[in-house]
Amino acid sequence: MKIIFAGTPEFARIALQALLDAGHAVPLVLTQPDRPAGRGMKLQASPVKQCALEHGIAVVQPRSLRLDGKYPDDAAQARTAIEAAQANVMVVAAYGLILPQWVLDAPPAGCLNIHASLLPRWRGAAPIHRAIEAGDAQTGVTIMQMDAGLDTGDMLLLEAMDILPEDTTATLHDRLARLGGRLIVQALQQASHGTLVRTPQPRDGVTYAHKIEKAESLVDWTQPAAEIARRIRAWDPFPGASTLLGQELVKLWSCKIDSCERLLDKGPGHILSIDSTGVLVACGEGALRLTVLQRPGGKRLAAAEFLRGFDLRPGMLLGSPFAAGITG
Image 1: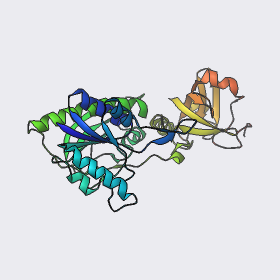
Image 2: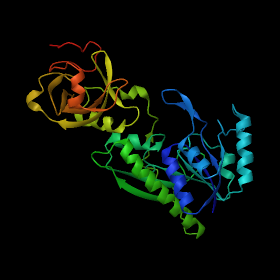
Image 3: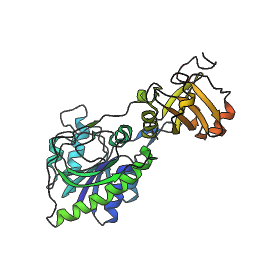
Image 4: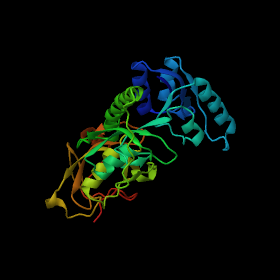
C-alpha cells in the first residue's frame, strides 16, 4: 500500500519504521520544521525526518497546512507534494499540526491516526503523561479514522496495556510506540482485505489530555504523597518535577512513598530525615523518600551521591526560596 506519513517525534519514527519494515511504499513524509536543540541551539531534524532521509523518502516541512492561514505558501507546497504522491492513505502519529479538511479528504482512504490512549479517554496532546498523572491502571493505543474534531474519529483498532507501578512517561512511551507500530501495520493489512471495521467512539468517558506546561513541574508538597509520586513519574522526561532547595531549583526523578506516621510532626515540604537511601519529605498526606535528584546543569544522581553537594538537615523546608535554614 502506498502511504503518506505525517509525524515528528520518536513515537512517530517507530511507527514509520514499522511501516517500512512491513514493505509499505512511503513516497512522502510530512514533519515539523527543524528546531533549535542542545546546548548550541543548532537546528535539528526531527526523528521522523532523520528516518525518512535514511530511506531516501521525500520530506516536506510546512509550518502550517491551512491554505488560508499565516503560511499559505507552505500549505500550497504540501498540497502539491501530497497530490503528486498519489497515496492510498495518510498515516498520522504525533505530527503536531492540525489537518484541515482538504488534507483529510486528499487520500482515497483518508487519514489514520495512531493515538496513545484508549479513546475516548485522553483525547489531546499529552495522553501518556495524563494517564500516569491520573493513576490510571491501563492505557493503550487506538487506531482512529481522523475527522475534523480533536481525536473524535471512529475507532478502527484498539489494544490495552497495563501501566506498571514504576512506569514513567519515558518507559510507557516506548512500549506504546512499539504497540502503535504493530497496530498500524495490522490496520492497513485488514484494510487491504476489507475487514477493517469502524466503530464510533462512546459518548461517555471523554477526557482531555491538555498539553504539559513547564509551570506544572513545581511540586506542591501539600498534595498527598501518592499524587506527587505520580507526577514525578509523569513528568519524566519532560518537564521534570522540581522543587526549590535553598536557592536552587532541583529536579526530582525518582521517589518512594512512605506513610511515616511517626515522623509527621512537621508541615508539608519539611525534610523529616536524611540517609543514604534518600531524603524523606513530609507531604499533605504521607511522605516521599526522594531517591534520584538533579542539580541545575548537573546529571541525575542517586540520593547518596547527590547529598555530598548539599548540607541538608532534618527540619529544612523545601519549596521555598528561604529554605536554606532550619525552620520551626
